Length: 276
Length: 290
Image (cartoon, rainbow over all chains, first blue to last red; front, side, top):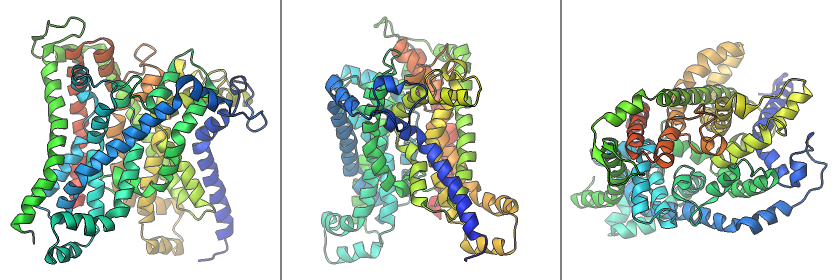
């Protein structure tokens, strides 16, 4: 494979892709840099990229002024909670569809995926009014239910594709040996499915963490996650760029880390198997 | 292979999920349809009355609806063009031999994991601010007049922000697809001295036709619902220059308290999304058979 032009070509393609990568990544980098500036420095023109007095003050101020950690707590609770409830429903369903498929299994799966394609504005008004009447507006429980329902099709779908890859003979062998369904799921299926379940959990935590339609419409303060907290910086007079950057950097940092681990799952989970 | 007992168990295992998803889909939808046939305003409760299709008549003849429909189409179309063209080019580039591909990939994928409210506000302020934004400074450096993005081209600004968020998705899927292109085919083309452009148009592009269709369909379904980016940057304005259909429905329901009219708008949005979903579901279904 080593050809004469390969070194030159490699240099060119490397330079081009690093340039493209840096441009795409730049807004995130710039946000992180700005979060370490003073408010005055943050709006200074010409902007400085490295040579300014780096300060962590913004991070402390954001926590002190707005009890930032409460929003972080809500984000964690909503993302993890809705994903765990989702698993509870999805594991048996995906198990049944993968290992005991019937005539209508395919249609059922397609129908479940199609619920994900419903535009949320079609449901906004009744859900809002129901939540208002049941005193669920701005409650963590209510929002966990909504996020759970929102992502359940993707959880089922992903688990289904992972379970499909497990050879069914192993389960049959366990059944022959007299394992009950429960034991079959807990002791045979689950250990083999752990990597798939972990990937599913990861992607769904990311999706729930970043969800910004229902969280913005159904919460105001008590149950508000980070998406809503950041949105509070949208008021025209709230132009505190350095603090906005600090709050934003903290809000996306954990998800960026999780996201890098879940690149592969992204393709599987969000294309519903339409790309192989 | 499935025994009777297994069949019953399988039904029991899928029943809870099926039931909750069915309720989640049908209850709000039925209520929205019902509301859409009522005169129902939160401002004067107790005056609800059945008025047939009047809400639809109002909604569909309202100039605001056409503006919102065109804005929706412009936003979806603009983002699709940028992400599909950009994603294809980036995928081709990342498929080349490069040093540090892992790091480049990470940088390219990162925007997808940024929550919508963060990307919208960071772009609006830090980058697109007409005086203190980085773009304004760059414009000054090269001696052109900076663009006041959110005053002069608000919808374009939102399109750029949303495209930045979705570019990684298109790139990642198209890169996966390109990498599944047969290595031998690539080598054969290279040995034959196939010019890069012919190679792209006769071998790569046909191979990408299907993944590109999938990217377009899936992105469209999500892009029809863009909401947070508009809420935190423009609030639909100036005027209704950046109001898309979801935002119009939201504004009618939760800002003007017209439940009936907003419900009619919600149903229109459902119909639009279903047209796209129809094709997507068919493509997924065909893949499930294989």
